[in-house]
Image 1 (tube, helix red, strand yellow):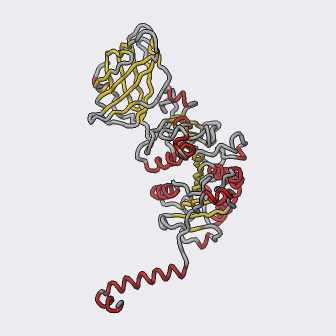
Image 2 (tube, helix red, strand yellow):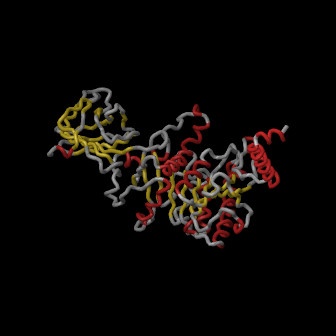
Image 3 (spheres, helix red, strand yellow):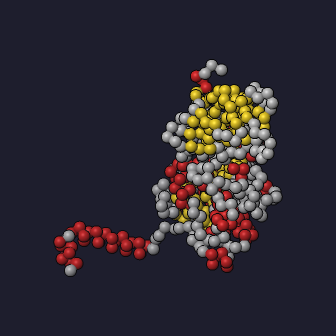
Length: 465
């Protein structure tokens, strides 16, 4: 039957033979792509002994890793030590499942650069319900990584080309490796470094800004699982470093209630790789100062452009030369979902009222197609003095090239007492996210308390003021 079929359809025979040969080779060699260890809750219940896989990916083997563990690097098929070497190190795994972001970060990094990516899989050792057991394994993982880097150096690698991205406990592992080389490795990025068991520890026992030539850190859960104080050359505190927009605020959110804020640091880093929009951060002493617009310009600090979050944060390195110590805190707000961008504006208001007024301004902007967005930044009350400019800091989830309508609402938030009004001589809307955009103005109008006032703005340069 098969013989007659092959006679009638010769290509069928060729395909069958090719498939048989390919299957036979795979069966004979027993080769399969090494994969990240996939465990489950029962493994966490009984605990796991440390076992590390070092999974190498390059553009030549992007979908099938090469396991460097226990291998003589001279026999590696894909490792090229003349290129940048990026280590991605995960953290504590209480349920044993692989990190949901692991493939995305690998693919995004390879899309950016032709590099070596080594996924440090220490899931066996990180999977346990007893958190201190995982903490104690961090030093052991760091020792394994040092041995690998030593071998790479012997084969021609440079410490300058080593870049470590560590998540939670992985951030401290990266720090331990950096200490072993006296801070001479190229860069460390800490994504919400773990706080429990590390808060209050000396720099020798945690990630520190001296652990690499450049250390950048994103803090997203400083009131729970993350580390509160600065650890790097530049420390980013999105939304103040605590409650992240879009994350559950109650336990009704299930497991996301516990991990969403902590995990947001990774997704912000991924967003910086995708570059679908620009996330602007502002060097500042505190989140409150940032929200009140006291730091919403990098011009005064002579640090243009403002520091970039995530993958391109190392461009800030040039601004640290004269700083002692070379450390900076930067704050910004984000939206509640990818790509997480917030678009920053200043609304400058000059009033005529003889008596000073204290209050809040709610700001909305709209475009010609009917899209409307409202400022999500809640700053302190502004004080409006006669003929003096008051600056209101605003941040929107959407940005419009052409703002067709602005809506302002003045409020003192007093429940009792008289209602006030503001006589506005000039209002100016200026974009901080796009400084080249025209400033938009409106002149001589009244804001009644708790009443929305909408108007069409005009470019400021068209009026002689």
